[in-house]
Image (cartoon, rainbow, N blue to C red; front, side, top):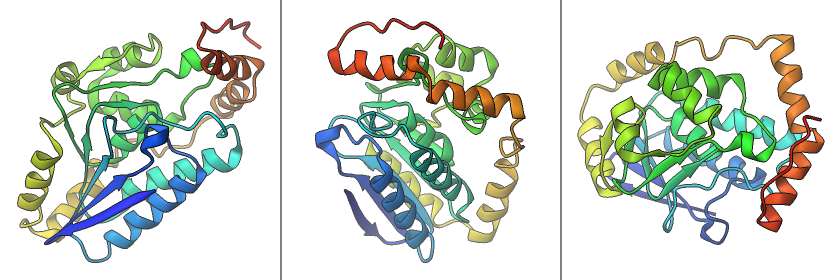
Length: 241
C-alpha cells in the first residue's frame, strides 16, 4: 500500500491505495509509521504524497470506528511530527479529514494549484482530536480554522496558501526539488528548529470534558447515521445522540 523511492538524501513515500482514494485504515497507518521511521534513519528529508488524483480521502470509514484505529492514527501523526528530519507533504487533488491531519503533522506543505483541503467531520457525525484542532489554529489562525471545522467548508489551494497552511503552490516534482535543496542544509540546525517549531502547545493534555466529548461523538448514533448516509449517498439526519 506504499511506494518508497529515493533520490540522494530525499526519500519519497507514496500512499498507494488508489482504489480507496488513498484512505487510511489501520494497516496503512501502521505501514506508513514504519516507513517514516525507517526513512528517518538515513535520509535527510521525507516527501509524502498520494498515488493517483487525490492525496488522501481521509480515514477509511468502512471500518475505522475503533479505538485501535484512532490510537494508531495519533501515534503515526506524532511519529511524523517527531522524527528528527523535515517532512514535506506534496498534496495532489484533495486532502480530506485524516489526509489533512497527515499534512498537519508534516513540517512543510506543497499543494497543487487545483487541490483543496477539507475536514468534513461534522458532516459525518464524528470529530477530530485536540492536537488536530490546535495545530490547525497554530498554522492558519482561529478564524479560518473555525471555517474548516465548524463550517465543514472546503478550502482551495489558493486560500490554503494565503492562510499559511501551504508553504508553496506546486507539484510533487516541485516538492521533491525543494526537499533536495533542504537536504543540503545543516541537519542539526534543522533538527533543533523542528523541535522548537513543533513546541506549539498541541501536545498539551486534553481535558476530561474534551476527551468525553470526542468519545461521545465517535460512538454516537449520529456517527452511525453519518456512515450510513455516506454509503447511501444521501444527506445525514443528525439527532444529537
